[in-house]
Length: 127
Image 1: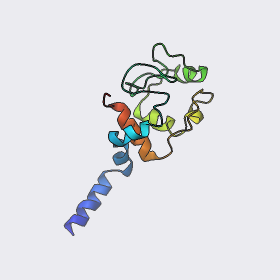
Image 2: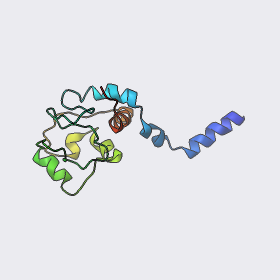
Image 3: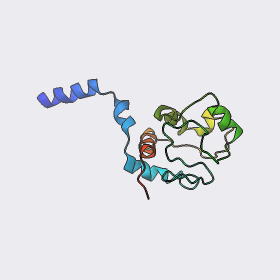
Image 4: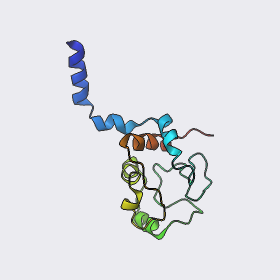
């Protein structure tokens, strides 16, 4: 009975989304493989897409030396920053959030994969 009460108390205090929002960076490294053809997250070198090293907390369209699409530049023109929340909106449907972006990636569909990917991007291990 005490265990059931404890489980119920935890469920009432900790919203389900907050547990998922933490994400697993190890699983996120696996999800990042979808991105790795065009991006890297462990150094500042741009590929077809900009480096994602330090993306969480960075202003949108701000990587020096990378030529962003007009759509992405306009999306970030008002000072948007890649917060965890904005990335959580962007990653499932990038072309829907930034209409006209040249990024052809369709998005990360599973919410747990999005949370894991964000956890990885926050602190990717060095290669």
